[in-house]
Length: 194
Image 1 (cartoon, rainbow, N blue to C red):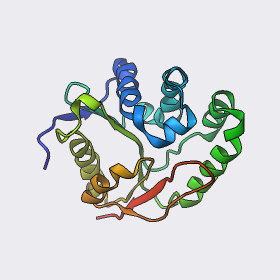
Image 2: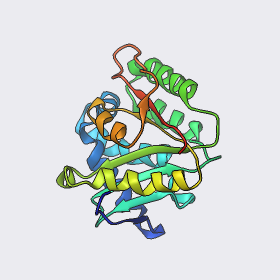
Image 3: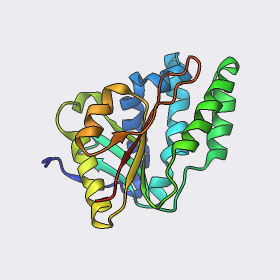
Image 4: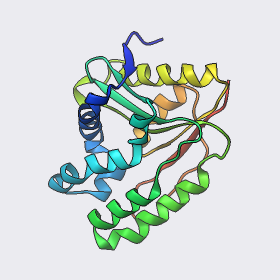
């Protein structure tokens, strides 16, 4: 069990939470495939994070570890990622030659997403200056305790193979691999209800 203090993100802390995600995903294979230039990444990633995981703010399911060492953005049962703003953002910000592949990956992600009631980990990120301190584990343990209390499964897609061991230590298992064109592999992962 992690000793990291985790709590819900307050309404006036959304910008700080997105900033942590921006730092955390700076070396993410998928995000840097979409935005290989630093300027484009810094300009577009915060909007991507809000579009993809921002529903966590509205449902009080965004969690912060310590003094913003890490942030997890979960979507509770019945709440889904709104594909329309994500599609619009990708269309407007990703290089035109990559759009067909990006949308094919999103479609494939939709095929893997489980249909039964579950908690969906849209994004989790640890500020690089806090990595290796149990922050990621603390964030996962906090939310997974809620999943277990409700006997609900949890689902995520890992965009970085380096993170698979962390998720596996917390009971997730890889249920497939999405590989399309030059897009880095994405790993759908499921943690069964307990």
